[in-house]
Structure formats: structure tokens, C-alpha cells
Amino acid sequence: VVFRENYESVLACQEMKESLDRMDSGAVFTVLGHEKEGKELLATNEPRFARALEKELHNITIPGEGEKAALLQQLYRQFQGTLATIRDPAVARSVKHVVYFSELLPLFYRIKDTADVILRMNQDHMVAMDQHARQQATTAQRQVYIMLVVAIFLAAAFMYFTGEWILRPITRLTRSTEE
Image (cartoon, rainbow, N blue to C red; front, side, top):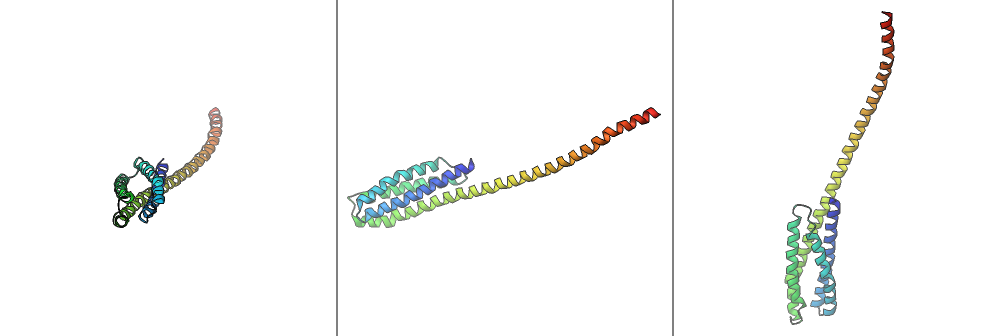
């Protein structure tokens, strides 16, 4: 269950990063005057990012992940607000250029870095849980071997003493009748 939950977070973070890259490309197209291509990229990838972010927000499994996911949500809201300026046809291209490089691009990097942190947290947790499970399996295997050796020893002792118990009563009987 832990592995599955962490894996879902990893997939959500990867989806967010991919969508964010494409939204950044859409913003660049818009700044360069290719509004149609830019709007298409943004329209396709904004819902993808939002779904992946929502999935991550509802799949908090490790300490510290909730705070990082909340930061991611806050940064994305800022990104969307700045993106609105770049989309606005009334804003001059030179202003869009300044807004992109001074505001949107730094937000892009912060969002991507935060998603990377969440992704690494979940991957590290998956690796740690895998190591823990392997250690438990090794310990259980050792215990089974020890119990097997003890069981074999007890079975051999039982077989030895069973023979003695069976033969002794006859010897005792013959001694008691002789007396």
C-alpha cells in the first residue's frame, strides 16, 4: 500500500513537471507572438497540471510532503495569475517579455524544483520501505531456518527416546517378574 501510494505521488509529480514544461512553452509562444499555438498548449496542459496537483494534494503519505504540496499549490496559483498577464491581448509584447523573464520563469523553476523535491521524497521513501521489507524478509527467513534446525533436532531426539521408551518397559517388565 505504501509503495502504491508513493508511486502515485511520483507519477503525479512527473505529470505536473511535464505539463508545466509545456505550459512554459505555451507562454514563450505567446510572448513571441504565436498566440494561437501558445493558447493551445496552455489550454491542453493547465487541466493536466491541475489534475496531477489535485491527485498529489489528496495523496500525502510522508512527513513534510503536505507542506511541500501546499507550497506547490500556492506557487501554481501565482503562476496562473502571472500567466493571465501574458495571455492578455491588451498587454504589449514588450511587457509580456519582461513579465515572462522577471516573474513567470522564476515561478516556473520554483514549481518544478518543488515538484522535484516531492518526487524525490516519495522515491526515497519507496527505497527505504523496500530495504525495510527486504530486512524483514531476511530476518523471517533466518528464523524459519533456525526453527527448522530445532524441529529436526527435536524430531531426532524424539525418535531416539521413543525407541528407548519402547524397549525399556519390556526390560523393566522382565526384571520385575524375575524378582
